[in-house]
Length: 211
Figure 1 (cartoon, rainbow, N blue to C red):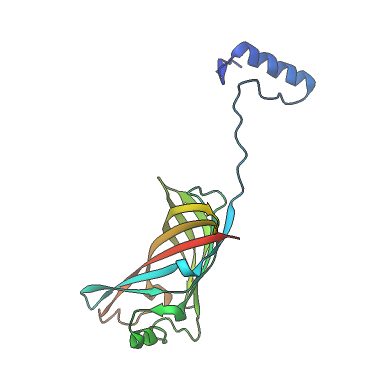
Figure 2: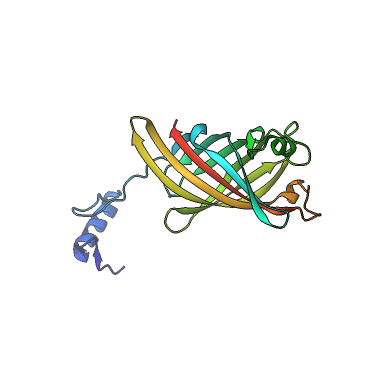
């Protein structure tokens, strides 16, 4: 095998070290000046801070404007703390009863069987199954979304928004964006009449504290 240079060390020296190691039956220690890869730190698990986390949704209304609402109670855990996909995982639950449109009558309708059917399905959940890095602080996270008892695989675009260690604890944040067709989960109210869009954009803001 022909060797030229390794880590700036002449090939003759590298060859001699390898030959000596083969005689001894061992693995040579790194030569002086050689760089060794640092040990990868274990991914950190964070508990979702419900005060600083929420989920937003947007749906086309009456063929005109985009109507926004939110869910105030988001719980769960995520493992990560950076934009690196290694060891990253999300296990998130949204309390459907926490829906908030600033209109009590509309909130009550959304909790009925026409929409979220909170009496039978109190939570929607997301559990990640895979993560792929994109450029910068962006990732594609694939996982199982369960809504109204129906589970489908989706891919969310997730931005790592930052991390900080302070007297208040170690914290990290992510923001996920994805779109679903609500009719695929059995929520068809208003779709056929064109009063409400089928596509719903969902944005989930997560801030977590190290467990």
